[in-house]
Image 1 (tube, each protein chain N blue to C red):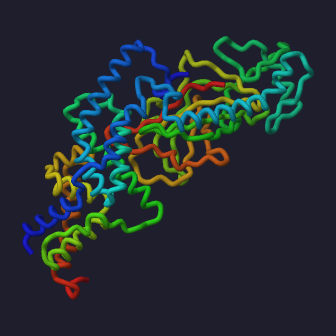
Image 2: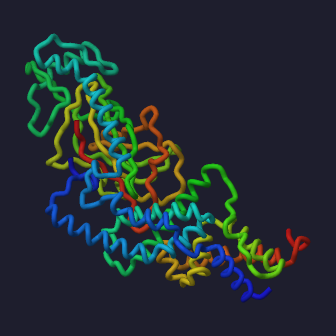
Image 3: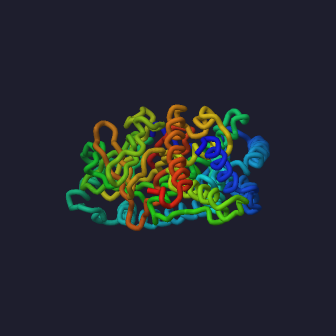
Amino acid sequence: MGVIGVGTLRRPTAMTRSEEDGGMATRRLVFERLTDQRLLKAYRLATLVMRDPAEGEDAVHDAAVLAWTRFDELRDHTRFDAWFDRIVINVCRQRLRRRARGVVTQIVMEGTSNLAHGDGTSVRAERDALRHALDRLTPEHRVVVVLRHLEGYSTGEIAARTGEREGTVKSRLHYALRELRSAYDAAERGPEGER
Amino acid sequence: MSDERFDQDLRSVLHEDAPLDVPDALRRAVADIPSRYPVGRGRPIWRQPIPLWIGGLAAAALVIAIGFWRLGPLLSTDVGESPTPLPTIGSSATASSVASASPSIPPSASPSVAPSRSPSSPPAVVACVAADLRARILGWQGAAGSRIADVEIDNTSARSCLVRGTPGLQLVDANDVVLLDSATAGPSGRAHVSPSDPSFELAPGGHLRTEVQASNYCGPDATLPIHIDFDLPAGGGKVKATPASGVSSDEAVPPCMGSTAGAIAMNGWRK
C-alpha cells in the first residue's frame, strides 16, 4: 500500500525507550509550566465566550487535552499563549455549534450577573442590557469583543489567536460593538425608548 | 451617551463576569492530562485512553467472529473436504467453481483472502471495481483532534477480484457535502497504486479492513450521518462506506484545530 498517513496508529521505532522517556519527561514539564501560566486567562476567555463558567471549564479541559497531544507541533514555545488561546477558541466555537444543533437555550451568566455592581439602577440596567446583548452575539463576534475589551489585544494579536485576517477581525469588532452599543443606548433611554 | 462611558461599562461587565481564579478541579484535571493521555511518536492504539481501546477490542472481536463464520467453509475446503458454496451474497455454483479454480499460490506479496487449490486453467483475476464491493464503517474512535473510522469492505460480487493501492478518500456528510478530500487534504493524495503495494485477492464474500483517520475540519456544520467515499485506483469507481447498523456518526466529524490543515488518510488494507 502506498501512502499510509495514520502515524498515530504505528508502533514507535526510532527512539530507544530511555530516550523516549527522557523526552517525554521534558515535554511534560514544559507543557505543565506553560499551561499553568496560561490557565487563568484561558479559563476567563472560555467562560466569557461560552457565557457559562462550567462550560468554560469543560472547554479549557478539552483544549488542554488537544494542546498536550499536539504539543510537538508547537516549534516555538514563546508562542504558546497565542497557540493555546487559539485552541481554546476553536473548542469553544465547536461546543457552541454543537449546542446550537441541540436544544437552544438562552445561557445567561447567572452566577456572575447578580454580582453587586455598586452603582445605580440606571447603570445596572445598561450593564444588564450589555450582558444580554453579549449572550446574543455570535460566538465569532463575542470572541473578538472579549479579546479586545477584556484582554486588551490589538486586532493583529486577535487575528493571530482566531486564525482570521486582521480585516475580518476589524469588521467583526465593528459589527459586534454596534450591536452592543445599540442595546446599551436602548437601555439608557428606558422602556419607552426601546424598540 | 459617550463612547468613553460605553467602553468603560463594557470593560466593567466583562471583568465582572470573568472568573477571578481557576477552579481547583480544573487545575487538577489539567495537571493530570499528561498522565491520563500518554502520547509519543507513533502512539500505538493500545495506549490510547481506555474507552478507545476497549471499543477497538470489541470491534476486533466482532470482526474475528464474523471472519470465522464467513471463512469456515473455505478453511474446510483447504483441508480436503468437499467444496462448500461460499456464504456470500449472490454466490452461485458458477461462482464457487470459479473461486476454487483460481491459482492456489498467489504472488508472495499478494495475500489472498480466499486461497484455493485446483490449478487447472486459472482464470484472470481482475481488479475490483466499485460494483463488486460493499463498504461499512464499523465504528468511530475519537482521538484528540482526530476521528478514526474502522472500515470493512466486502466482495459482494460472484467473482474474485483484486484490491491494490490507495484509494482517494472523502469524508462526506448526509447532504453529500465533502468535508475533507484526500486530493487536497493529504497525505493519502489521489487514488494511486505504488509498485510496492501488495495485492489482496478477494474471493466472493471475502473482506478487508482498514482505518481512516480524519482531522481538523473547520468548515460549516456537517449534517449527519457521515460516510466515507473510497475512490478506487485506475478508475475503479467510488465505494461508499456507510455506518453499519447501530453505528453513530455523532463523533465522526473531526474538531477544528485551526492551526494546521485538515487531513484524511488511511492505513494499508489488511485481512
